[in-house]
Image 1 (cartoon, rainbow, N blue to C red):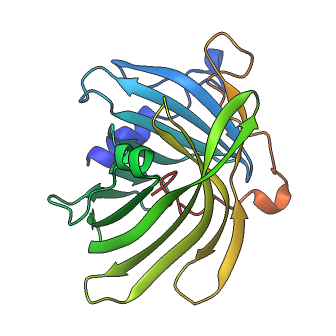
Image 2 (spheres, rainbow, N blue to C red):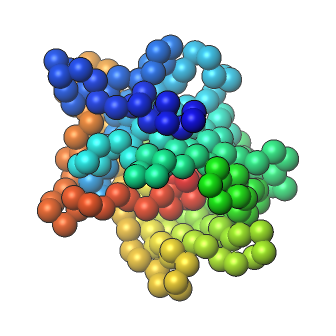
Image 3 (tube, rainbow, N blue to C red):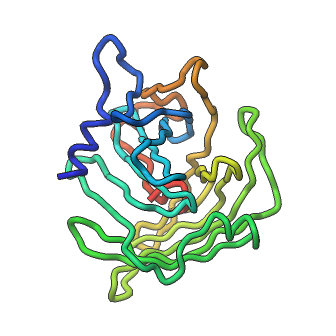
Length: 237
């Protein structure tokens, strides 16, 4: 039931504050990111969590749809799909090759191999890598390092469930990944191009901070579409 409680926690606040994200008690929002593909994300930290943990709540035109927590190494600790059938996904203990933001910064590449526990379907296995390309981009005045990534998720019998490959961006000091142009394969062998790159970074006191209405790439065709959490690029899960 915890995922249902957290889903309620990111619901839109009282009408007087309509459109403003309010994190759970004991938590503080530190950044809002407006991205392509009709997504706005509110990033926040909670005093009760281990040092370095960060949360992100994603909204599309229909409201909140995805919630995730990462640790100081940008490992996917837990995530919640807030769709019609809410689902919880957690990092299984003792990964074979833990994801490591520190290793990526130190060696320019980080491989990973771990299992995820899904509350409705059991465990899956994820393998892949993130690699710094040596290039950087500046988006809304923020300098980000570019990465390339690839991942495959399978069931425990080895059947491929989804794949993604492409580019993402990191902020070294924030220890965060942001989506970029990539390709997504949902298991049928066809790769679909997607690009959820950030467009605006908004901080406390700035117009648009804590917004829950996405601004970019939103049109009637997007009304019933939420960005696929390729996110297993580090940005989403």
